[in-house]
Image (tube, helix red, strand yellow):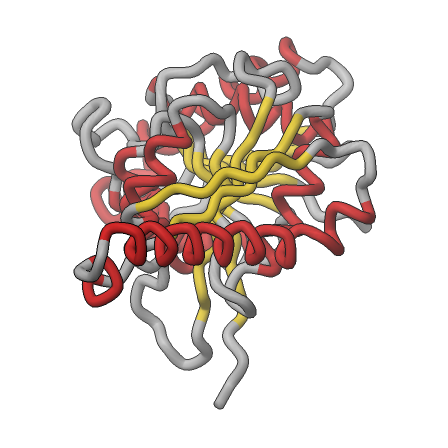
Amino acid sequence: MELPLVVGVDGSEPSLRAVDWAADEATLHGRGLHLVYASKWERYEGLALAHGLGKPSERVFAENIVGSATERAHHRHPQLKITAETPVEDAAAALLNAGRNASLLVTGSHGRSGVADLLLGSVSLTVAARADCPVVVLRGNQDDRVGAGMNRSIALGVADPGEGDAAVRFAVREAAARGVSLWAVRAWRLPALEAGGHPLTAGDAARHHERMAAARIEDAVREPAARHPGVTVHQQTGEGPARRVLLNASATVDLMVVGAMRRPGYFGLQLGPVAHTLLHHSACPVAVVPERATPP
């Protein structure tokens, strides 16, 4: 059975954008869409009120939210199979639980309590840093279409060997499904000791590191791209910190894909500085793909 795509909803404008994007994505891949709205309403309204007066106001509110989101997604894609749940649970925990049986988790950049268009909300950050499946956070002010984004391309941050294989496969599959090109991006740095010599020597050193970055891109995408020969892959190397290079690339694509290493036995946020920066500041939606670290 194909796993559904899960989207977190709370009635906010960012979550409605996430519903639109998720409905397109689910339709594109032929999957069902599962809506999740979580709230700890019992803590505040109590079971006594629930039994004595019928449905409590927060339960009615939750059902209205998922009902409106379901109607919105059905209006966009009438044939889409949609399910929903309203667990009495912390929002991040509910989404992480749903993500254990999902192909993809989608969230807005922040919810009803967020400060609009500034930093990422705590729920989205927690989900992106701990989910078992890929997570897409709807950053930026682009339209909400998946298959016909305005730039008709996605970007992949190419990591070091052994650290980004799942992200590469995800990015290539996504480009193939959308029928768009893929920009594989790799940053490089010139160590200070190499840059301090003769200008010609420094230039040779810079070209060497740039060639190394290009070779890493070729190695990373060769096998996944061979499985999807219709995908056009472009190489892009940039001198400087990876965070800056990928942030610049996010301004001209419809989706940025990066990996995040998951280490067994560690229960904190597992993102890394590059993914963390992109989630807070990217100009386009960001897909964070979990990578399983190999135990020593």
